[in-house]
Image (tube, rainbow, N blue to C red; front, side, top):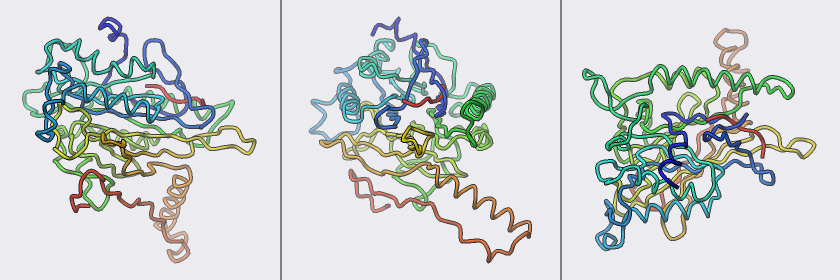
Length: 374
């Protein structure tokens, strides 16, 4: 697709997806829908491609014997394999799509990076990262470096962007909970952006699924966006990239904070640790009349770029049943704190932790219904 056409695609700082309305993917506002036969909506997350000049660009952090035949084209081949294997309904690129310093023509590189998605005719959306702007391409949003001299490091999600998120979330909740088919609770939502929030540092090996092999490179200040998501009440998971050697997913205050893991071959990585991508699948429940109802569950796993596209670390991010149990237990705790009933009359709170699955690529010893608007 020509660069002129590429500019018609909406690229932003935050991608907000709520499973209740029509998703605004591009200027045509093409609607996204759950599969009529499967009742699923499938999302492929691609993080940190670091694309540059195609076959001329060498790979980083692979074994020496892989170097002669390894380039950006390996990144392209990986995306194509995933599209064929997973058949996503939406592809989300979460920043550092190109490596601006090494791209002789950044516009051409960006087109090449997104080409498999565009040629597949699958709806896609993208956010920008700090390496996307290290070129001649213009941009306005964060996912970049701080522009305030007294605050070093990376940028953060600005108040204006959080206000947009709050306004959009409220609009979707009102639509979802009004007639002709009013729902009792907000539709579960997902958020995608590039740089992890400071709250990603809240986890250790005992309370996440996946691996943490480097520090959390968040902004040096906390913008409060995590609190904004918690207050909104409809976000069930957030997905980022940026730290290529982290691919974990952990739950904090009812929201899963997840990395995708490094995807691109011109990005830093670890020899012997396969490049990877994250899948997210939302599934609808069946009604008594055998029609598709509301969202029943949201699950995730990762795919490795090996001979078999191995799937690892499958986990449930949210389910309607567990959410009901959570609300019930929160109510019980409130009643006990207020002294209305004795503690011994309340059943033990169900633990909802998922066992961690080891990454098969390493042995570290550490072990369609209507949907939202972008």
